[in-house]
Image (cartoon, rainbow over the protein chains, first blue to last red):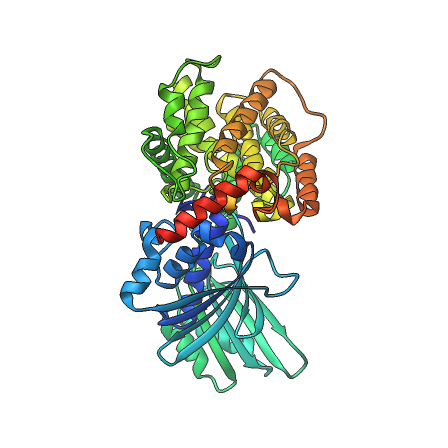
Length: 222
Length: 294
């Protein structure tokens, strides 16, 4: 669903909503996977991101996003200097993810402490983004709302249990999408939530014996 | 949000309200937020838009590569042309100003995108200044512009990498034209015709920035985009109707974008970017950028 405020916005540092603001938002989403600013990251740029990213500050914007800067933060301009000063090791590479990948796509592999994760996402234009893959699983996360994504064994009552945990935390589910690769195989849940879920909710979900992993992604739209 | 401008116009006519009212109501329902909150966000956007216009008019900014900057000030203080002293000239200057700020990694409102961010503030704030229109009506006009942009996002694209510049400055011209017609007192139907008239004039427009930088021709294309919007506003306010409905013009833009060669979609592989001068300038400037670590 397109929001009017996505069209008249975001307020952002130029020069490109897809290559700068959208790229920054993908960085903001990626950092959620390791719970904060990654110490190391490999950023693989695909298509137009690879071809024209440098001139649009795509590298600065993704690096800034990984450090938690939002699209209207003027520090984006000097983000590459800041990562150097902070001793963060981010490397940028050009790649071809696949022939049908969105022209503004990026694969980010990150490490923070003992946490390691990988995300593929695309910048769709006008600052809107879509995370299409987390740790090899296909997902659709827009960052328009707070999101919890999880992979669980395909057990009965799993949705009720998760919904219960969210209700106990006073969180209202906006959307819920359930997919699985095969019957009895892993089930994949993407849950969009109206209000900010505390990190403990993710921990509670993750502690369930049949949940393989769970992540909490921030709302990154305006 | 609406996926068809025709639906929005029908609802507005049935209720006897402007397009901005149905747009704000739809947004409030979609997002579960009060209309006042959405108008407040648009008010903040207007403040940033005006700030970018003012900042760019000073004339001291240079883009990170040095390819563009300082031209808005020339329209403000330079020698007269045929539009001297008219709001039209001021609007062209405002469009250049915002886009010069954007190219210098300054703060702007992407509306609908950063590459097309000059058109809407130029047309709306320029006309508001010329006609003494109060901020509340400009904010309403921004909501109408958002509605039109949302329809374009649903039916076609707002990304130069997907649909060429017709999806950025073209869409911006359509948004500005429809929004300005409402702001000047035109009917929802006239706003629809203004959008169609503006966007028909930008069909096929390629995205061909030198070196892939949102600088050249982007800065100037925002000024010409604003000019196309002004032509559409003038025609629609005069009662001229465009036979192809706005939705179908937008669909056409999407279809042309989908078939547009990748060289013309923000890759710097074709168009002005691929001219001998375009290639030379890009090579020199990108080399300078790398050398300076910028």
